[in-house]
Image (cartoon, rainbow over all chains, first blue to last red; front, side):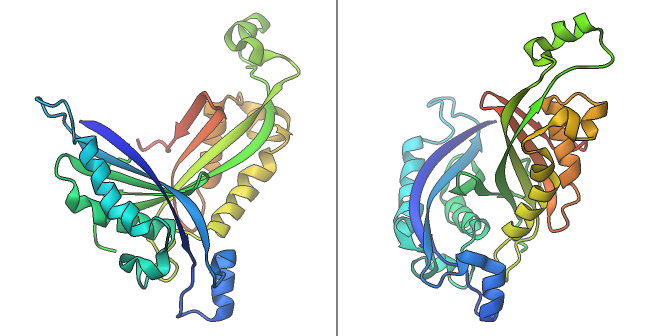
Length: 140
Length: 141
């Protein structure tokens, strides 16, 4: 089994706010992420696909194809967007790193035609990231 | 959630500390041979990077495995405050007994963070320099 990883960057804004909480609770739980005007990050996404290289092409999955999937599913959907208002998959969710990583997993998994999606790692900053993978799969 | 997906949160922290590699079980010559310039009696220092991974249920109300403020506060109290700008040999009790190699520093940090009450500690990775990295996930592996 070989693991291949493709990286991409996108920039987006978001804010954390749960309408079920009071204004005070929102401020206490989410701190400065609760600023009603939002704030932004340069996100770095690493997508890892696992598989055996095709004996003819030597590839797990054509990187060109992966690049196109990422461009269509992620960049066009999230780059330079306000995640709370412009990404329907995140509607009614707090757009934390964890939730965005899960949404990205669900967008990509059905599109990966060869190999299988192994891991999605989303960096919100160089010091903070979330990993998403299938339960029971070792996080290689 | 029952979608079969597992989420982990990764967070990087930094501290700077000095250490000296010297084992009381080895002779002076052996210490010099094994540890080389790391055996310098006056010690030397590094800018350490600690990467901590925790897993758990993502709370639907907050979107979080654990509130970052809780994790940051816990790591600050358990590791950064006692290690930063300290001599690991002199100031951290665990290294009176064991040699503060980064292998042992990694295990000590894991032991200190294992009791984080809000999520499960998956692993600890310590970079002693950008060229040397150590990882520990407990003994189950």
